[in-house]
Image: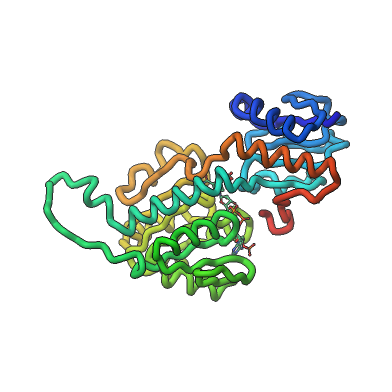
Length: 310
Ligand code: NDP
Ligand code: OXD
C-alpha cells in the first residue's frame, strides 16, 4: 500500500481528488490518498505552495515530494526536505496555456491593439504596425516554457533571441547565455518576455541598469515571477518613457496589494497570476506517472536541481 499525502490547500483537494484517483487507478497502483495521514507512513507528498506542510522532518519514510506547481522557489530552499523534489511540467496544460498567454500579449503590444480597443475620440488614424519579422523579441529563460514560447513566436515570424544560464542551441532562435548574452538579448528586445524562475541569481535581474539597455519604448511581459523585476525601477522607467508598457502576471506579493502603484499605472496591465494554470487532468497524470516510477525504481521525471533552485 502506497501512502500519498495531498498537502495542498482544500480547494486543490476538491479539484484534484477525482483526477488523481483516476490517474493512479490507471496504473493499477494500490494506494491510500488523503489530506491526513500519519507522517511516518507517508511515501509521497503532493505539494503546492499553500501546503500545510512546512517541516518535512516527521515524514521519516518519505520517498519524494511532487509539486503541483512549476515554480518551486518556496519549497526548494527548505532544509528539512531531504528527498527528491519533482516539479510540474505539463505539456498538455501548463505549456499550452503559457504559449497562448505569451503570444497573445506579445501580439497585443506588437500590433498596438490598445489604440483601437480604447479610442474614445473615434479617431481615424491609421498606423500600420510593422510585420513580426521586423519586431525583435527576447525571451529570458529557455526552459520548458520559455523555449515553447520562443518557438511559437519564431513561428509567427518574430526574430527571437533566447537567454539561459547554460549555452544551448534551439533551431530558429538566437541563443545567448551568461552576462554578455544578457546584454545582447536586452539591447535587441522591442518586446521582452520573462520566463525565468525565482532564484537568488535571478532576483532583480531587471533593475534600473538593465532596463536602460532595452530599446526606448520596449514592452515587457512577465509571467515568470515578481522578484525578477525591481518594482520601483520599473515604475521609474515607465514614467520616463524608457519602457512603453509592462504586462505583469506575477508579483512579489500576491494578490497584488490594493494600493500598489501597478494597479493605477496607465501603462501597466495586471493579470492575476493566470498566465498558465496547472490543469487538473493532465497534472494528475504527471503526478501518478512519477509515483509509478518511484515504485518501479525508475528515475523520476522533472527533478529540481536544488543547488540551482529550479
Ligand atoms: P525551467 O526550469 O524549465 O526553465 C528555467 C529557465 O531559466 C532555463 O532556461 C534556465 O537556464 C533559465 N535560468 C535559470 N536561472 C538562470 C540564470 N541565473 N541566468 C539565466 N538563465 C537562467 O522552468 P519553466 O520554463 O518550466 O518555468 C519557468 C518559470 O515560469 C517557473 O519557474 C515559474 O516561475 C514560472 N511559471 C509561471 C506561471 C504562471 O502562471 N505565471 C506558470 C508556470 C510557471 P538553463 O536552461 O541553462 O537551465
Ligand atoms: C506555477 C505557477 O509555478 O502557476 O506552476 O506559477
